Amino acid sequence: FYLDDEYQWKGPFYFIQGADPQFGLMKAWAVGDTNNGDDEWGEEIKLAEQAVQAINKLNPKPKFFVLCGDLIHGMPGTQWRNDQEQDLKNVLKNTDQDIPLVFVSGNHDIGNTPTRETIDNYCKNWGDDYFSFWVGGVFFLVLNSQLYFDSSKCPELKQAQDVWLNEQLAVAEKHKCKHIIVFQHIPLFLRKPDEDHDYFNLEKSVRQEIMEKFHKAGIKAVFSGHYHRNAGGFYKGLEMVVSSAIGCQLGEDPHGLRVVVVTDEKIVHRYYSLNELSSQGIEKELLDMLAKQN
Image (cartoon, rainbow, N blue to C red):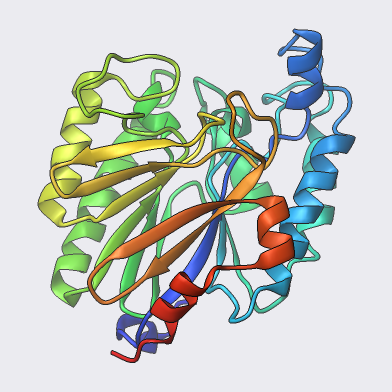
């Protein structure tokens, strides 16, 4: 993943983005108790298994599989959390060993108002809450969006991520990467950069600052989850892609995954239902883009 030759562009590739497997939400949502109703998650286990099986069958293989947060439903300190995490790990360990897993922290993973303790706990279980990596000349950034949402209990951690992000963007500039792509749980916005702030997006002044920073750095796309529906839009040249959930759907979308093809010029993506991806795989149009020699 971090080998030196990954700084070089070697031609088109693709990765899989999933979001919100969120073990426990379907039951909680059905019974109308999102605080304590998450004592069953058999349905989510099946969906996550279907996702892993679909990914394992794909040919060529994706470069990695990123899960954009809300891995489980139980908030820090709640009763079923450890069981939910263990069950998700058991499903994910069946992912083909040649397909690295990338985890992004969501609000249910570290709390709506994270603390040093909830973040440390997440890191012990799933890896760093923010980091960067290179794949074939493309620079990827994984961010902890809870620090943008409410860092009141750990302001020093937000500051550390901000400093780190500026350093990373300087590195990207120096290496003249093909594209820069960001993963975070909470979308900057759902449809329009100037929409009102609510639970599913970032506060306007925070959002504006990040969008402008990303735009200036030449970031092409931000991929998020959190909304449990597909959405997205543009800020100048920056595309905001909001993917629906592997788990509980809050809108009309099917349980699914997003296939993201990275070419020399652009980033092309399509959301597939789990059924469609398992039975048919990736459509010819995207496969043809991958086959083009640059």
